[in-house]
Image 1: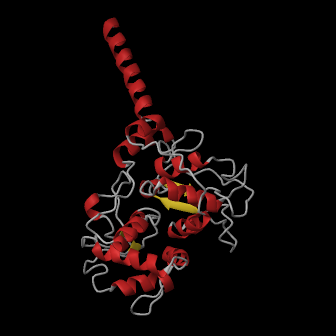
Image 2 (image 1 turned 135 degrees about the horizontal axis):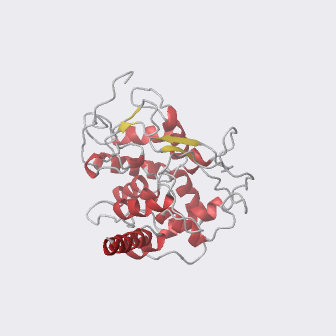
Image 3 (image 1 turned 90 degrees about the vertical axis):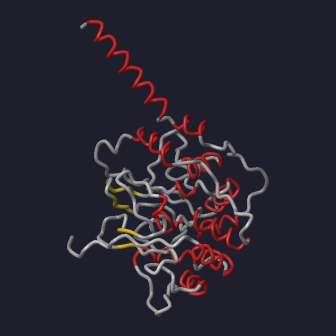
Length: 313
């Protein structure tokens, strides 16, 4: 029995050491990261502004209770099956925001979901999509954010149940669902379609809301963009944006682009809810970028929407 207890203790120690190693941010960076955290040259705040609106940063990070969408003090609560996540202050305030961050800190957060102090961020921050962005575009976005007004005040902690509060476990989640790859243009496709693919898959992170998720919080590859239950669990349904009959099959490229500019559907209905905030951002993009996004959405494989939940269920 004594030897058996020793063996169990050794196995437990090895298991704990393996867990600690596999869940560390450095392990993910070694296995998946591209290490390109230091783009050189003068940054383009104009391109950063484009990335800011393509990414809809203000939709989540604008300070709650006020109308100035350049004040990124955060505070919005995002409800989910895992608890409520409160969006942080990302204004350039040196203490309460990201004003003391380096460019490399920002790129690492966006592409690897790791904070400057080495902690994992929860994927309510959609770095699973932002990893598709190039480090140069992320650096330009950071340069643009630094031109915005600093906002004082830190946001409250997330309201999460145990064991979701154990951030270290996110290391295993990342090893399973974060690949560290930037968007790869298809040389057989047009430059417009590739531009649209980059904006939709990367900064636009459209797949994050317009797809169903598994119990683990990941998106099944064969259900991407097919729509699904509102991820905030409010009983709503996020629409299918593939060219399926249950999605955008009947829509023209021009109609999709017009929606992204005006918020009006081909039937002259206006979008509401969180999509209204998306339109406030996409309306700031160029006509060419909106047309490119529409071109890419029309090129997606058609996928049938999952069943909508019954009312009252």
